[in-house]
View 1 (cartoon, rainbow, N blue to C red):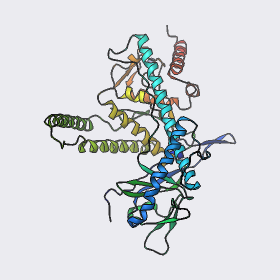
View 2: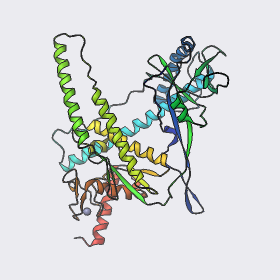
View 3: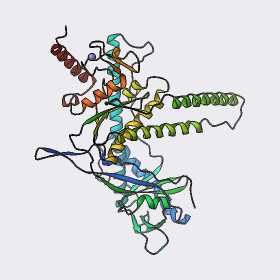
View 4: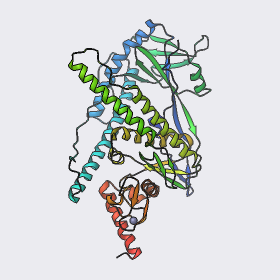
Length: 463
Ligand SMILES: [Zn+2]
């Protein structure tokens, strides 16, 4: 049986930290270590097993999920996530399954805590910026003080089991037409479930002669079970540690601007036109729905738009292409790019549909990290505070240095350039700027930049 949804995709596992290449000092010389990324082959359909067989897995799933949820809640609210925490809750599952649930829950709670912490930091930054503007008297009339709403603990809705070899063992099949057997421990004591796995041709090609990792992921959706396999790939580093640095500014008008003055990709033009059309279409549809609803029509047309989905995919493809090209045109270099927060993304895409653009900006930075990881070149995140407002010549910080989105024009020294280029030069310099890296918040960054500006004035003999 073939399934149109079957596809091969590669993901970097979060655990690899592939974006930060480890640098070690040996005999006073910096050496960049080779690193490993985890590649996954997803959507392997488990349709080869007869339906009765998978019933044992169906029975296990809700029990496992409920236990996992208990630990997720516990690790989010009461204790720090700990993969090796002692078992706390009663369950009919075996001790091995219990351990797997604790481990998966610790991972989920860990990223939830990190994301929440980051978003909270964003909120503090936004609040600070708001108060700054309040003092300066530059607040927009409609501007409201940002508020914080505490996050809910994550709820596990989808069945996803991240199993290790203690509970799910993957074995090569020698004596059948299948590629593998999955040996799964079930709720019944010592009873193993044997599930056959047959790979599609493209799965086989993707896997080649790779050595598979022992941990597997099982997902249930649309009443079917799916398997994800993964393998490690060692990336040899292509760049010298003291290679020249290229700063990357990400944005809407130019997806990527490099500090040597090149631009890659844009949301303006064709993409923007398409987005406008799509929005119009959705607006008309919503009107129609409201109208039909009033008349008591039961079956309403759907609000999701297929062209909207296509547009999102298209934007992502354009982003991927732009980032790819940027890396291809800068061999043997290393990169610095911005640690984007929600606040900076909003700032960079202030115009209409900020949300959609913000999510695309986030996609650009992900692609930068991924390209760097797979090519074995270092890319380092640097602080983004004031990169677009500070003058790259005299360090003066002023919102008014940006007369419009495209232009940077310093009010003190008169330095005039394309706005994204000015930002990318600032980003480039922040790599290795230890003083700036040590700043705890926006206020400290601003104070440091003002200090540098004052020093610049003295050196230049500025009145
Ligand atoms: Zn200046």
